[in-house]
Length: 444
Image (cartoon, rainbow, N blue to C red; front, side, top):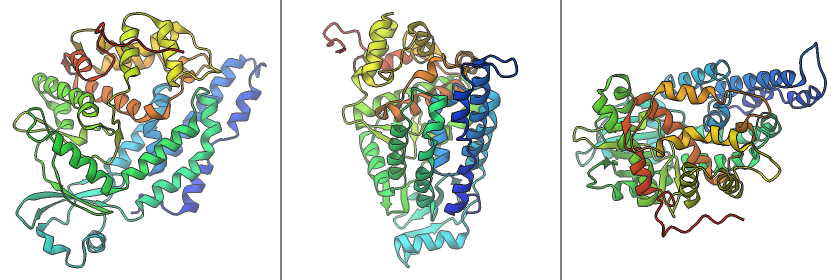
């Protein structure tokens, strides 16, 4: 694993290059002019340099640091393209160019996990992986009963590297406090660490995948391959053929794009109500359009357990926003923890920031596009202290929900899908329906 720097001293040295001293320098820049520049401009320049260095270092690390960077989409959206562009490119390179494990290492892991006679479980096993990701790779094989299967193998040492990062990342709290004063970074890190530990546990992933497979068995819209066998570092699932969503993004017809986009949204919104879990890694590589028109779903390592479905306040605040009552929306967001008690926020700036997230729910039919997304992003690429995105907090209970929605909007804009997305929200998100019998939002 030459691309996964596991040695603690190496990873610590990388993280040590993060400019923690900028936190103090930002304060020094306030209230006075330096070289003829305004205090606000000085602070903004310091924050921009800080952000550039943060994203550069996070992009070079593969593991918990990279996962943190991916999850902080709220931070990413607030920064200019020239800052996060190279970071995104580094992440893409890390994800796409992960070198496969040597065959001898693959066989060693299989022997440790399935026993010395591991080959007896398979009629055939392809030593060349069909896919590689940040913590494991997938091989195609034929199970002993003749079924084609996908064999997911975790990289040795990946768990230690991932969890080890978080001990180092804890020292970033003050740094992110400069860039996002409204964010409770300690709580976000704690939530992410817990989720990463689950992602490393293939038994938990098998449990989640089996629950989804049972619920969607025979479903007219979705297919989830069931689990065949599992151990700590090996997960064997039914093989699933289909057209990757990435291929539809690259060259699908408009009809294919619209169908894929609608099913994608339906799956994300209906799963908490039907399974009590939200698929928390909506990457195009985890979805396939099958020959029978269904959407196939893979990779259940990251799930958000929502036994009661989506939080009711989520639907209620979305509905109230559409009705124009910003006072109630602001109070509700404060109650839910999105606005901390010591932070004052401009209702008009908050409305402008939230509009892109809510807009698709306000009309009968909506078209997602890259141009629409770029226009929305341009409105928040501002590092000034008055920018509303810097004043918001991300409550731990919403960390994965936010990650899914931000990434999901990105996928829909890549697809350029047009559909009746509002209907899915009405059907599956508690509190969104304007049913007069729906209980009012309790504020106070």
